Length: 78
Image: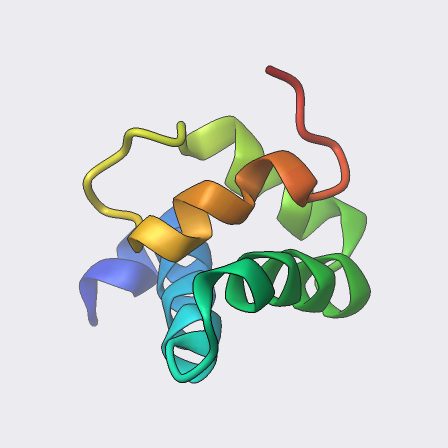
């Protein structure tokens, strides 16, 4: 059993990091909205809600690009 199996929110952070890894080849001004668009399009409402409830932008477990994309994710509340 992995750490992400024990904590489903860590699995969401891992998935977001994988998306960010793909977008690292892009300039930041394209990567950040691309990450948010991907999450908004392919993650369920529940996944987005769980992710946003579990992590804050300054969480060190998040990739910096993911943190910057958070305000663009549907359901974000500052």
